[in-house]
Length: 127
Image 1 (cartoon, rainbow, N blue to C red):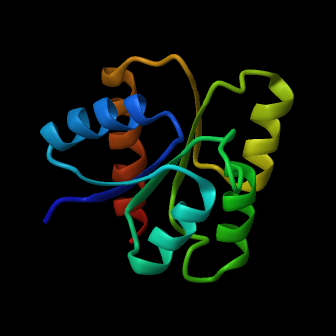
Image 2 (image 1 turned 30 degrees about the horizontal axis):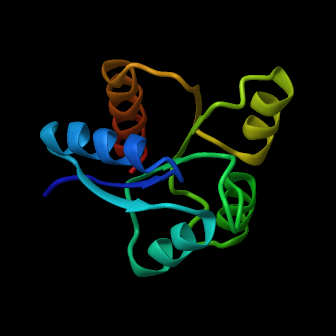
């Protein structure tokens, strides 16, 4: 069974091309385009990984991450922050809020794939 990834970003082109690439690699990708939609998807399913942007409408990635950390059934889902926020303070905030990995934009799809594989391999080893 394919591992499920929830991909959350308000940049529709980024979501389209990243989803297409990841599906070619054998992942099942569910998309969301803002923080509220991400939380709705999380209530409907339990992904193996969430790829989350920070700057989005309705609810930021920081807010989504905070809510995930406060809910027992969501706090152990690994989160890869994929964002244009490159400042050290932003990265520190992400680590403090519990992200599994912090990746800045722009990014290479092959590099993203490597990070995803490492996160999912590490998570599988914990089970």
